Structures are given as C-alpha cells and as structure tokens.
Image (cartoon, rainbow, N blue to C red; front, side, top):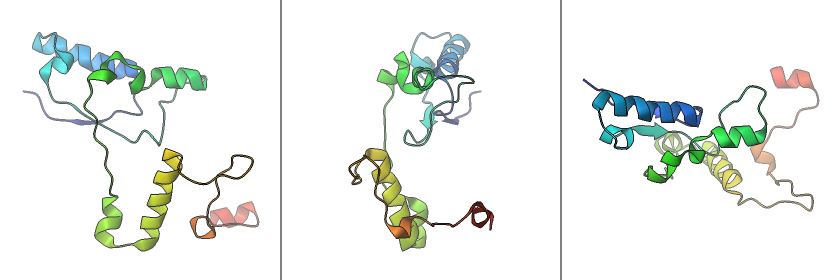
Length: 134
C-alpha cells in the first residue's frame, strides 16, 4: 500500500526526484510520470538551492528541480498568505514576511550600487560581534 507523502523537494537534487519517479514507475509497472500517483513536492524557491559539495553556482542550478525534464509536467501552486502572521495578527511579523517576499521577487528599491534599501525596523544594527550572541 502506498502512503501519501509531502516531500521537501527543493533541497533534493533533481537526480533524487528523478530516481523517485523511476522507482514509482518500476513499483507500479507504469510509464506514466510518477506512475500516475499524486506526489506533493513542497518548498520555497526563494529560499535555497540544493547543496552540491565543492560545486559552483552553475552546478547548484543544474541540480535543482527546475532543471529536470519533469518540471514541465509539475502543476505549480503558490501560497500568498503567511498563515502564522494571519492567525496571530502580528503586524511586525507581517511586515517582515511581506518584505522578505518583496526581496525574493526583486520588488524592493535599490541604491546606485544595486544594494537593497531596508528600513531600520527591518534590521538590528550592532556595534560588535558580541552583540550578535546576546
């Protein structure tokens, strides 16, 4: 019996996802993508790429799920609401989450050098390394 699983897909290499596809096809004697099963792949593309030991940024991009031939067959959904913020009505966390989304989508204003301009409320400035530990 097969169990429904959600997979944190973004920290997996595309070889791992393609191996899952092949394994499901073999187990169910099917040539359909994922053997016709619904597989939930979850993750935040604005957060991380797979880690490749001694790899270059190019190696990391080539190893990510979006580089797989399976990617064109994936039905994509995007979450728009940070539910933790929504249920707790935390304005500060809401502003923080909104700013993170803007950073990820490239919608924040930049200076002449191309650096992102963040408000003082978004960051905590420290005088030395010791303050980071406290």
